[in-house]
Image 1: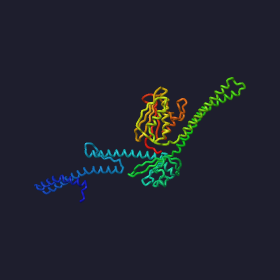
Image 2: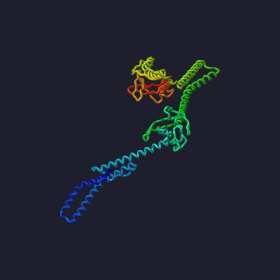
Image 3: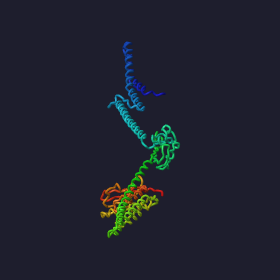
Image 4: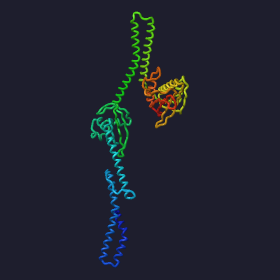
Length: 445
C-alpha cells in the first residue's frame, strides 16, 4: 500500500481531531426537537466549519514546509538571493526560518570568497612566468596556463586531453627526474627547474607539474659572479701593481742619474725588496683564489664525531680549549674536508680569544628536528663580530695577514655535505658562536 503524503496525513489528522465533536453535535442536532430546515442548515454549517478549520491547519503546517523546501532548492541551484519571511525568535517555526536565512547568508559569503579566490588564482596562473600543467590519473592534460601554452607552442584547447608523452613532458613526470633538467620544447629550450606534486579533484588523484626556466637567472647570476670576480681581482692586482710601478719608476730614475747618491745601493735594495714582497703577496692571492675555485667533491665515508673533534682540539697548542663532549654520533662525510672546517673554526676562535685573554669551548650534540642532524658548536670569548654582512665574502678578512678564504671554504664544504655554517655574536657574553650543522642520515659514497 502506497503511504500517504505528509500534507494529506496532516489534513486527515486535523479532520480526525475534530471528528468526535462533530459527531456529537450532529447526533444532538438530529435527535433533538428541530425542524428539518434547522437540522440541515446547522449540519451544513458544522461540516463547513469543520473542513474549513482542518484546511486552515493544513495550510499553517504545509505552506512553511514548502517555503523551506523552495529555499533549500534555491541553495542547491546556487541562488542565494531568496530569504524567508516570518523569521523571528521565540517561535519554533520562526527559528527554523531564521536558521535557513542565516545558512543562506553564510553560503553566499563563502561563495563570494571562493569566486574571488578562484579569480585571483586564475589571474596568477595567467600572469605567472612559470609553466603549470595538471595531468589526470591516466596521464592526460587537464589544465595549463599561458606560460604552458607558450612553452608547448599551442593554445590550451589543442593541448587538453593530450598525453604527457605526446606533449614531450613524460621525462619531467618520471619519479627519478632530476630537479634541474636541460630540455628543448617548441616554445624554447634551456635549463628547467622541475617541481611535482599530487592533488585530488573530484575524488580522483591528479599530478601537478611546474616548469620554471632557470637559464636567465643562472646567466644573470653568472654575470654577477664574473663582475664580482673581476672587481676582486682588479682591486687586489691594482693594490699590488701600483706600488710596484711607482717603485720601478723611482728606481729607473735613480739609475738614470749620472751621479747617484752615496746610498743609492741601499735605496735600490729596499725598493727591490718591496717589489718582491708585493709580488709574493700577489702570488699568495692568486694561489688562494685557485684553491677556492678547485674545491674537490667530498668522498663520503663513515666518520665518528668524538675522535674527530678530540683530534682537532688536540692540534691547537696556543690555548687550552674546553671540550664539552656530546653523544657518540657518526655520519657520512669526507673526514679530511670536515676536519679542515673544524680546524678553521677552532683557529679563528682561538685568534679571537687571545685578543681578550678569553677561552674557547667546543662541543657537539644531536639537534632536534624532522631529520636527525649533528650540531657542532665553537664558542669563543673574544671581542665578537663587528659586522656579519661580509663574513662569507671571498678574501674579506679583519685579521692582519689573513687570506679571507677560510670561512668561505668552510661554508662551501658544509653545503657540499648538505649542512650549514652560521656565525653570530653570543647573547650571554662577548664573543662569537660558530655552529656547524650536518645531516646524520646515511649518505652513499
